[in-house]
Image (cartoon, rainbow, N blue to C red; front, side, top):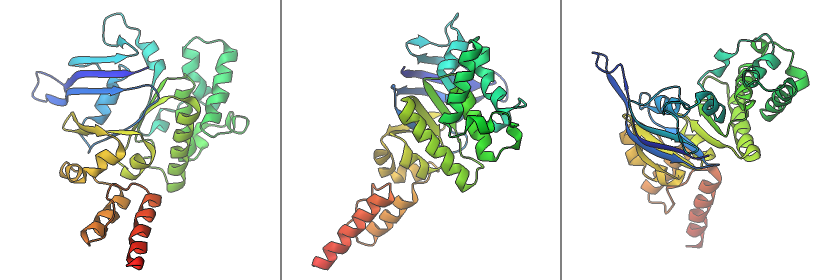
Length: 287
């Protein structure tokens, strides 16, 4: 189910003194099964863009095409689109409201008018997909859980609708290191087991470099670059010039290069860095 964004522009409060251009002529294609990272400094348009992908916002001009359907054409069933494209906002636990975990996760499937047997099956499956034991947690209040557990329950509520695309807006923000690592592991597991398309919005360059297949870089309402993590972070000067950072391990390799060490600078993982440094050490030893 590809997503195609064509010449998308969005203007908040047009024709008023508060008019603001949030997106300007954005073009982007996301193919089935891809794992994209979306990066950009605060105010670059990331959240505005992803809210167009399931019809929460309508373009001022341009098109958003989901599975061959222009979702902003008259007569399009946005309810069906939102079942296909699941969006998890920042702090999704703030959207929890039912008295038990089971009821909260079941809310979406029940609104799809599914048989109760199917709703129950989806709730159990979704909770287990995010690493929560159904029998242990189903009757607990979501507000008694840890921050990481609450976030996983919120994600399960989206997964229970069986979306083909999962969009996560800063899913680890505000979590402690343990909760953060758990959420990231579950996202990777979901992508591998469900073969769904994932779009991850994050300010963490380490997470983006480690997890995604492709990156889109946003700046002032435009996608200014896209490519593989190695391609994107190789252009570190361009990223820094628009207020973004690069992974710490890439910083290290650049410092070594500046000190005259013959190392690659498009390094994104500790394992790659270790291999590069060992090459230099062994080469020096042979000399």
